Length: 273
Ligand code: OAD
Image (cartoon, rainbow, N blue to C red; front, top):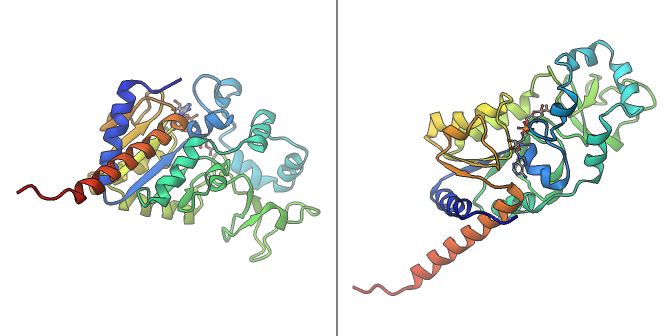
């Protein structure tokens, strides 16, 4: 598609803001994975747009009948469109660019609402999965997380080997509170941030959508949106890049490299005075 001139200019401004900041974090949403073939939830082609949002009592229903939930799960009750996309998906250039920014010491942490495991698959290390990770299983009592293969599913529902609590998928269900460990980590990261990239999220699901505002209130943080469309946080952002993250983030890496290169050569220029 190619980036517009205004998107390129906004990316240059983004690179400058990030290099001037003390602690940059990112808040990512489903749009980050759109170019990996995973459907978003809202907007054209979104899963909730097509099929309606799931029952808000999802977690309550799980607690009322965990065995029935697990039986349905093992019989493949997940939305086939989502399951197949999750099975096939690979990280896209946007995910890889975030890893480069982290490796370069420019991006300190990513809070993602995505459960697709693609940030980790790309190599991101400093990451909080606020809505969980679909490849993991979590204890509702002690919050221990396990790889799927570690959990025998011959007796349902599976129980935690550490505390005896009930096990569920790590993916946060509708009506389920955010696990306290990950919520605390997200709030700590927001409180440290003086620059937040808001990437491919409609920013209407809380508490995730409130994190940039925590950074703004505490640290007067610069908020920067990268998204082809307007969102609930657009007006709060001082820089807006209207482009897909898979195209914009690699360009952002290039812009930061250019600026850092400039800085290095400037430092080597002898003082004229
Ligand atoms: P949404 O589906 O609400 O929003 C997706 C956003 O991605 C929209 O703002 C699109 O404009 C944008 N978008 C689409 N393609 C893009 C691209 N190539 N590059 C960048 N942006 C693009 O997804 P989220 O905001 O992530 O919760 O939704 C938040 C939560 O709602 C999800 O985590 C999920 C859902 O209910 C749970 O599963 C618990």
